[in-house]
Image 1 (cartoon, one colour):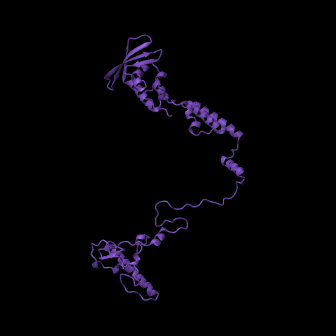
Image 2 (tube, rainbow, N blue to C red; image 1 turned 30 degrees about the vertical axis):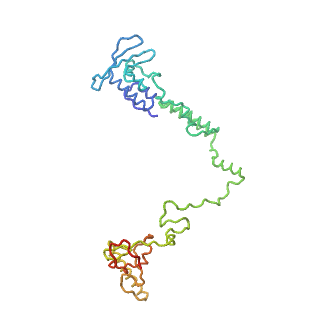
Image 3 (tube, one colour; image 1 turned 180 degrees about the vertical axis):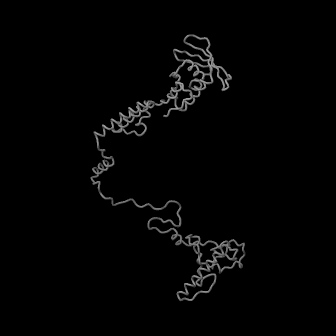
Length: 344
């Protein structure tokens, strides 16, 4: 654990930082600071062993707020305050720390340190390696965990003494070099030893070639798309849909050409019409080049096929090639009809 920052530099504060947990030390540090800079002791008559004081609590502008009576038994290191801070919150108050500073007491008495606020509230065995990582009771595990616990205890004891930590590190390096000289080779890996043991039990050589492999996983993640396949060599989902039957979408009224069509609307009517004308011209040119008679210019080809610029494989567009929008005139049907008649 890192060392917290001290606000007063008093030895009693350093002792508190080594004794209390981090969160509890922050509270005790505040009381030590207030007892040093915001409390003023006034001695009252008492005996040789018992000292009585009146501690005035001041604000930042040195104006008095209230007063408390503090009694200190010097030989027994017992103290009492009328604020009853230790009884209420479990650690000494600022008025007591003010009197401790007045008598140059540098350590908090042990009977005023509650065990639940201390860093070592839990026994050291709880933090041992054997209790943290595993409950392996083999001989190797027990010795290994014991060595790790010993090293951890030594480093924790010397955490505030860098010189002794360097000496400990040098000693550990010396032991390591001696071990490496005595055992220059690494021991056999556990996996190799485990494989040899299994081969001996099953009476099967361990160097057999593998002829059976795990099957390849199928692609079934998600809800499926038109591009997805069921597995290696499987059939496309779109092909399965086509076998089940094509789904024809409803015709829409194009306000530009005033016709119920499947392939365009008023936004792309001119574009579709230009694409159809270009396709027809290309088809006529190909027919002339092949020595075939060219078809006449119309909205559709002589064989009734329609040019579709949408190169996607969406199933909703299936069946558009079976219907020519030029054969259907919207003037014969009212615009408000909800379900247009099916294509011829």
